[in-house]
Image 1 (cartoon, one colour):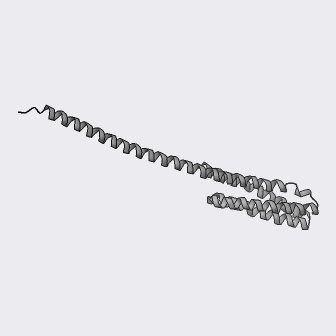
Image 2 (image 1 turned 60 degrees about the vertical axis):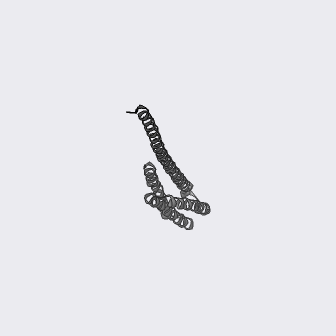
Length: 171
């Protein structure tokens, strides 16, 4: 019987090489797949964070502009007719800036924040109407109506802030 040990040694060596190559190939495929998954997860996380930061900036811009509108109208109660006309012109400019900020919120969403932002814009328009009435007739009733409207506007800032914070806290 011929010596089969050389044949068995060769077969064992070839089997070891094939097994090693196969294991290496499977490992590299697994590593490539894991790397792809990691890149996809990182990209998605960066996209979500960028989206969140864009929303946050839009929300802060609206909050700041809403506060500017309120601050610009706080001292109107004791103004003369001429000073009320100047305050009305300034308010109209601030209202237009608020409108731009609300338009940005309409793009960023979601609906709860859009509704709260729209409420601020509507009340800012109502403020312009009340201030115009006060400018035309500085009666006590018109001034009181303006102050009631201003307080209602200021109260609407809180719900917008709450809605924006809730959206930003979502994951």
